[in-house]
Image (cartoon, rainbow, N blue to C red; front, side, top):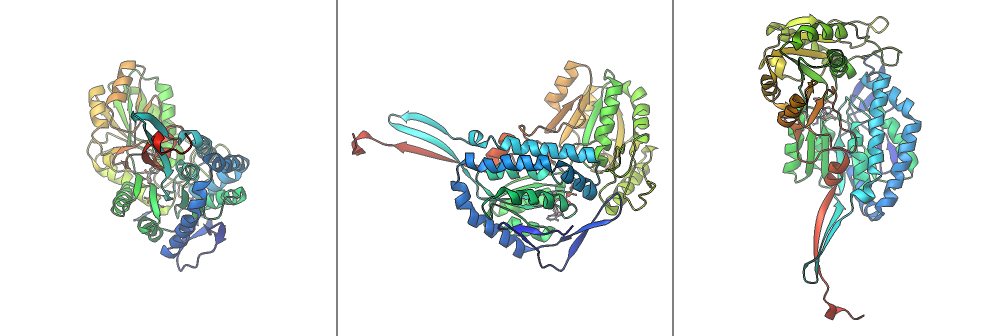
Length: 488
Ligand code: NAD
């Protein structure tokens, strides 16, 4: 597939010297080459968005969302094509790709309610004859910088809200997975949007820096790793922009002795190994409490060892490859590091090959046991199908362990005790909590939360938070005395 930019309503072939190869992580086939664009392309996109802004802003919100209704139906119609594209560039299974797109579409649906969600407020007679009004106005040109692991869904935590709230928009997809947004923009093209309302620039750090420094861009959303999130947050803030930046994760799951063990094992395996562990809500630290260890360890090892790994478009495959060779090397290195720190490798996914897909970057599910709290393997985000097991004696220790890490994306608890569940919900220092849930991914009408080193900012993506982020409040205090009126 040829990777183009989309600027001012036109597909543009950028003139660049450098490309990043997009390799299908299961087959090893080069699917595309991402052009590494720079400030010239960002300037063109931001300029087009700035020019489109006054007209788009003036369009009534109820007219703006009509484009989103059309986009929803086009996305539904092309769900199969989009999902296949995701599998081929990102590696996850077809079903996982489809589930990802369902959440993307759900965000379009929620944003269709923006005429109501973005309406203002008025208080009459705050003093005799004086009224106070709060209006929500668009922020201006906004941009999203996206990660590789959800090429279709993550841009939709922002894009539909930005547009419906009257902003114009630039997206920079991950250079590792540029194809999905090419397919989606073929649908955007059919909407008949005014030129420049939505633009796409492909590239890497140089394009990102161009976005962060561009004076016309007023709001930035980012999803990716924590070091880059911190950088985006700092540089955007220095430039006076509104910013939110989602970062990495190291998500604990606590298994109490009273948990329904069969259910817990199935759900925890799906969370740890689904999407090959490349999900910011994947559980990666399995903490057994008291007697839970006796049955859980053996059962989760069986679940890990029996998972069918392969090319995500083949029927029956439960887990695809990780994104690329570099990632595989890093994950395998971290498994080795865990072993050198004293962990036992109970199920070892290193050196995996899948017959017929020898060029694929597969890592089978891996279980490390007796991982020491505070060790590097217990602290570092692996972003692969590796579950590190630890053991504690009671819920107090489990909560202390949950809160001892630096990330705060998700924490889960499996139990049949309402008391334990409530305590955990109350005390766990994470933005997304799962109670008997392995991937606590918020629906589109809730914010996609994240705390501590997993998030920098205050307003999140999705739902009302996104409406708040993509609008700025203006407060008007008005006095209209009778004596000034000629008509009375
Ligand atoms: P990444 O940080 O490497 O890249 C994300 C984006 O930043 C890409 O568009 C990339 O081009 C750009 N980028 C990379 N390095 C940069 C630099 N030095 N300067 C400026 N821009 C740069 O992340 P990734 O590998 O694509 O995605 C995986 C990470 O994303 C994991 O850490 C995962 O936990 C995290 N993630 C978090 C969430 C969340 O909601 N918290 C969701 C999905 C993924």
